[in-house]
Image 1: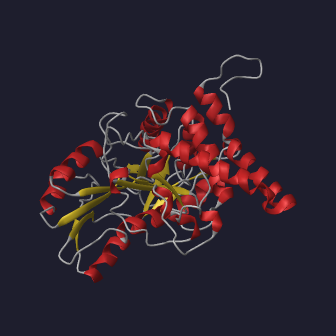
Image 2: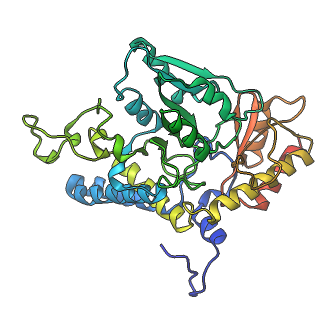
Image 3: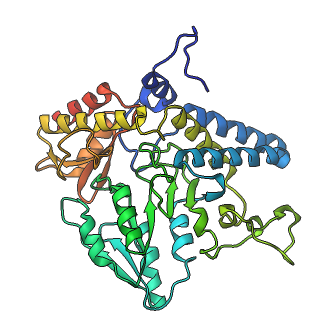
Length: 395
């Protein structure tokens, strides 16, 4: 797709993005930390798959596989890594388990995890206790602020890995991955990143920030459908992990369907195992292509800047109508710990009832841990935010 109007004049990134998001015609949509709407380009790509599958069965399978390969390429551009370091997986949970269950743990090893993690980035690690692995849960205070010193204090010679969410799903706190990666590696451990609340908005250059593993489903900030995501495994770690979910698609010459003498693929795709969710990967690929065109992977790209500006405007609007921010707001809109997530409450109001009122007013957001949660993307504009403010003022 190209950023140009029908008359040939260039279109602004804001206009391109807004035009792609049909949801904006009906809703002020602020639920991207839960499940995002998909852009028009993704919907059209998925429709083409549906028609082909309906009319021709698997005749177009090679084309679908080619689209999956393009999605892998887009993911590698997103993370500034090699395509060989990307596995296309159903969801974040799958990716986390692939690492948690694939590492060669020994009794007496330890793993460090924050106490306020989303269940998907806690339960797989807790399951390792049956192997004699100690799971060290680092407390996080009510502010949601992550203190690297607390993480460092939990690491010792037994620690094999530290796992962390890049952006807190409730607090919106964005961790400094560069600092954490350096801290963890200097302590002799590896770093796993649950990147689902950051990828698609904030750039993550794995050449500059040498994290070891990352996983993210595409249905949040990457604007893809549910059930299609990515797993990043640094090339030097590929042989460290045992592919525990082996299948026909894990091996070289996979389409010969032979088990005897089978040799595993040399890259991260060995972790994919079986048949792909082609329609989901086609949709995710189209969404990633759009976001990459909008330079979501670049340090000074439009997407991150616009998201942070929107979040600052949201915070101001909430306070203007009497709302109370749930966590300390960054001092500046472009603070390195800021994200597109803003949690708040309306005094003496039930958050579930408030959400229901907002939906009736054409505004969509979530409730998490008793707080209302706004998650604004770069196509949202001031009109969307004012619609939120007006609806809140009418409670």
